[in-house]
Image (cartoon, rainbow, N blue to C red; front, top):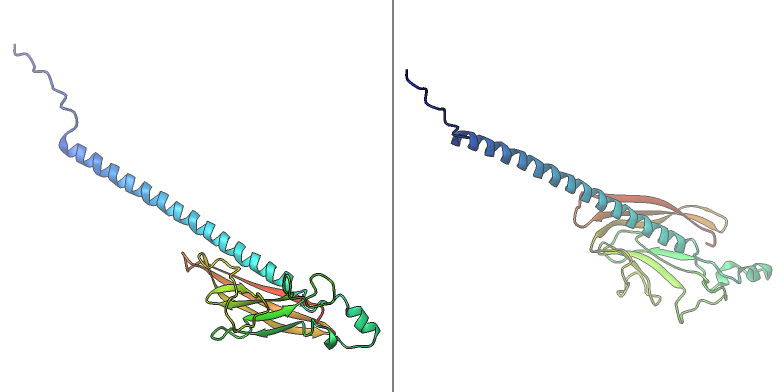
Length: 207
């Protein structure tokens, strides 16, 4: 009788290979999108945390300095001699103004007796301090400059954070103490959708 011809194993057909490759490409694309999305979320979370840390750090620095405004180591001597606070070289404790073009209340000038000698020193380091908002950055006062003059160095990081709001405003006064409201907001330079804001109370005891 006739012998049956052996069946040859021809492997995958061209159509099968194309289908398999298409499925592989789809799975690879999905995996890449998933990993990319995950990395984007992680980067965004890191940027948000960094932004919040920078805004909080600035608020702590500013409030810790401003709350010392008006301190004079000789204040008790003025009190015992019946003299009023305005004879102190550290009076008034602070002045609130703004750099031209910046919002009201975005610059504060103040002084305090850092070395406890009762004198408003200018050398080697000035005891006239200050902070202001200028061109999206928080700047620190040097050399007793006014709110309007240049030459204030940045203390925020303008390469990564844009400060969108900074203000200090009086809330309530009791005796020689006054409570100020510090408002500070920032925006990430690389991802403007990321923002952080703080409302911070600052108690000045020597107003």
